[in-house]
Image 1: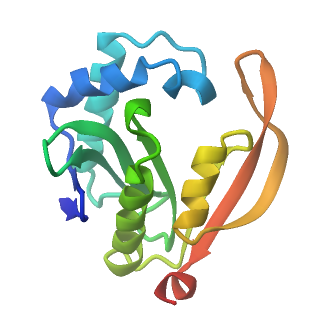
Image 2: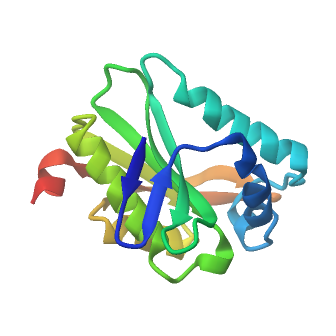
Length: 178
């Protein structure tokens, strides 16, 4: 599976992607809103291995693709939609991007492509997402792709020795079509 945008190619992961994943997941800004986990080559390999296994599910429920730059082929993150079951008409969307590439609109471009895939190919009715409330960059991406904030969950995630509020976003198929 491959999706193409103006500046990006979203493609299936391959085993050789783990060093690029490790490079961005080790960045201190990337880790800001994740659990404190030592990012090691083995963890990066496990992460890529998990994404490779998802490609062979039948029927497939998780479509997490590598975000690569069209100009160079460089892997700069991942983005995907994930269904709870094969029959589900609802999925969540998630993405992560190399902090060295933040502020260029890549996450928005990739997420738009995944929404289009979800609504047109998977015939989803609703796509939802959540982010740490203090992660303004992620919230802006969700808003730029047309998602609306549906709520704020207080003290929802415990990370890095404290509780964090999360924001819940969603978009419906008819809103996407408009």
